[in-house]
Length: 205
Image (tube, rainbow, N blue to C red; front, side, top):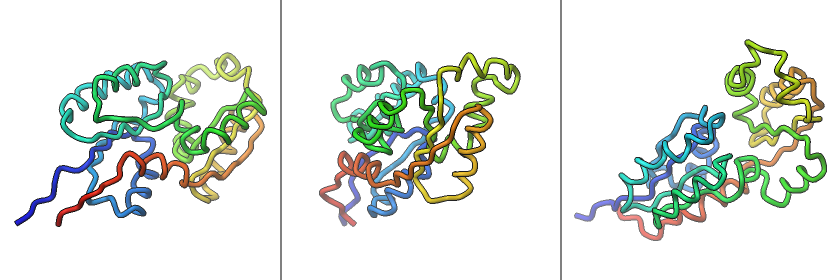
């Protein structure tokens, strides 16, 4: 009797959980890919991303691994870690905003207005926990200008057409005293970034 080979492993940012599940389900990959999530609040402490991943990569050195992070503020630290693991790769780009929007579209948005604070669906829904409280603005609201004084707008790069998420993004912009724009980018670019390194050429039932 044939046995199912050990399939690819995805080590993913918790902030991508909903989108990653949707992409794997759409590609009929849910039963063929193992996913382990890291805490979403590492988004605020990028220097901890590579150290958190290192023991997980060491334990999976003989497997194909997709690290579902972009550089995400590690300043090349993630790439230096992945240089030690030839079977592992990460998502392209500097951050999840670029992964979702695509490099060309994101570059155009950033060039059009460098003072842009970007939100994804997840960050819009969890703005209070990850941004407002994460930056200590709940305790020291006077720091808002120190953190966001050079920003002019919030751009929500939405993955789903969800009025609740759009409202949350607009509320976040209002709280920060910034203009609000909404760009629906969907999951197409993200799905391609995930699917390419996860190609499974053999599935044995």
